Image (cartoon, rainbow, N blue to C red; front, side):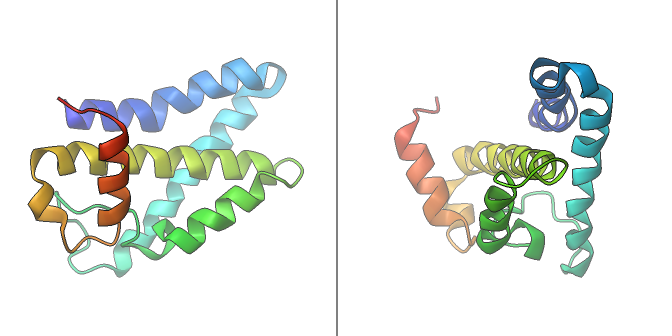
Length: 129
C-alpha cells in the first residue's frame, strides 16, 4: 500500500494540481512537475544508492532542509520558477509522507534519521492509527 500511495502522490496528485490550477496550460505544467522528479538524482551520491527504509528528507543533498527552503523561495518568482517550486515541494511532501508511513511502523528505526525531529513533530500533530 505504501508503494501505491507513494507513486499516486508522485504521479497523480501533480496531475490534479495541474488540472485544477493551471487549466489552460495543464500539460506543460504537468510535464514540469514530472521533471522535478529528477531531484532524485541526488540518490546516486548515497551509499547504498537505494535503501528501502531510508527517509530521503534531510538525507540527500537535494532533499535537505536548505534545499527545501530554496524550493519555497521559488514560489515567489515568476513562471516557470514558481511551477518548479510547486513541483519540488510536492515531491518533498510525497517523500515526507513516505517517511511518516515508515516512521509509524518503526519509530525507533529512525532515531538517527536527519528528519527525526520533524517526523516526531508531525506525528504528534496527526493521529496515525
